Length: 150
Image 1 (cartoon, helix red, strand yellow):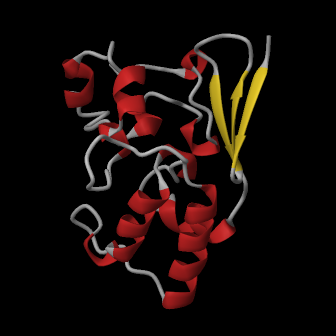
Image 2 (tube, one colour):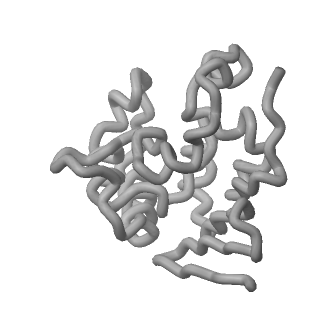
């Protein structure tokens, strides 16, 4: 039985199997272009509004890099992320979680991944979705499309 969960401008489609997840993102050209320059343009629904606000407010020190944007581009991307953000708190603390890999959802979904996979030089960290999820750039995180690097 297929289920469809709509939220903001994102959709989580569940196509009848517990391991088939596809986060379809509405298109925002600036978000896609700017964020995917260094990493997968993470589906906005993976973090709540508070987290996206903090991330967008600190682009000059974005995980050790200067990801600053011109003011108009930053406003457009921030508005898109806020409209499309997840509705649940990312964690149990009052402080917003800034890493998707630290959310309860991520930890639950990846609890069977051995520590050696994260340390693999081809993976480097849990933030590198595209290392294993070969269609992550299109929002597809289905377990049918995983290729573990050797």
